[in-house]
Amino acid sequence: MLAGSGWRGVAVVPAHWVAHAVVLVPLFGLSWALRIRLPRLAAALAAGAWVIWSGAASAPVSYAAVRTGPLWDARLAAFDAALGVGGPWPGPWPLVYDLLPPLSVLAVLLLPGVGQLRRARVAVAAYAASFWLSLPFMLAAAAEGPWSHGGVPTPAQAAYVEVFRQLRAPGEFRFDTAEILGVVTFPSYHALLAVLAGYALARVRFVGAPAALLAGGIVLATVGTGWHYLGDTIVGVALGGLSLLVGEVLERSSGARWTPPTPRHPRQE
Image (cartoon, rainbow, N blue to C red; front, side):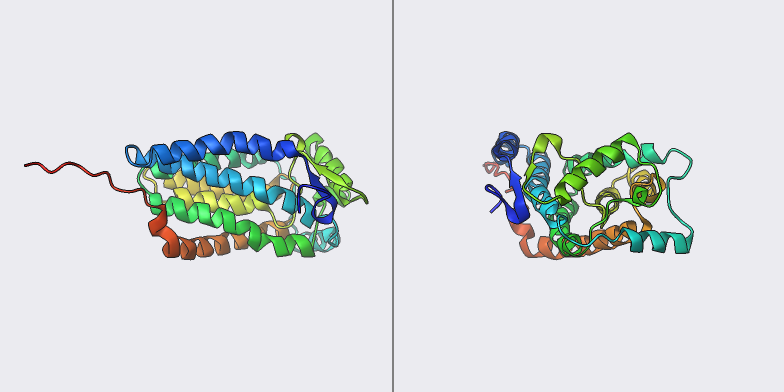
């Protein structure tokens, strides 16, 4: 149970669920109310709500998952060294890395707007599935980050390290929505989500090619910024592809239930 001492000692403050309920209830309600007259807007609202709910439910579990697993930093750093890669690289990689949130939001909102409801359903289902596909990796291996082997963390990375070490320390850890930074280094969720966003937007006219290029740049930036090892990124990309396959299966098996009803028009006598 996550509400008390929690799984593996991660206690979730009630404000986490309250804050998300304040957002989710109106979104789901408005989506249902608009499902006939404005089906595309209703689909966009529903997609956003499902993504928010999936993140709200999975985030505390991911924190608990990385609490006690063995640290793989030495192995991951050795893999990077053997291939001669590793960040940070010179160039605009931090800016590219930070473009993932707007790219993901665009993917969620744009697809229903241009009528690509099936692709939107696949992407949302893949996002939900990605957590469960990633969970065994979180339980089996954890990593602090490339800076743990002689690098100097940026201020943002230093803040991450502080939370990560508190999480790994004995005793209860309180999960607070207002303070979470994300602690999953292995696999790279940044790379995984970039794959999903690139897929989602790939067939949108005038947007697909730039979005795919940007998604590829974000994958590279996970290493280029020094936030992730190459191994994190490879596994993240692979899990992104696997999540899309699962999303396809889920969409085909339940797609009819996602489709808004067609409005009825009176017969012309």
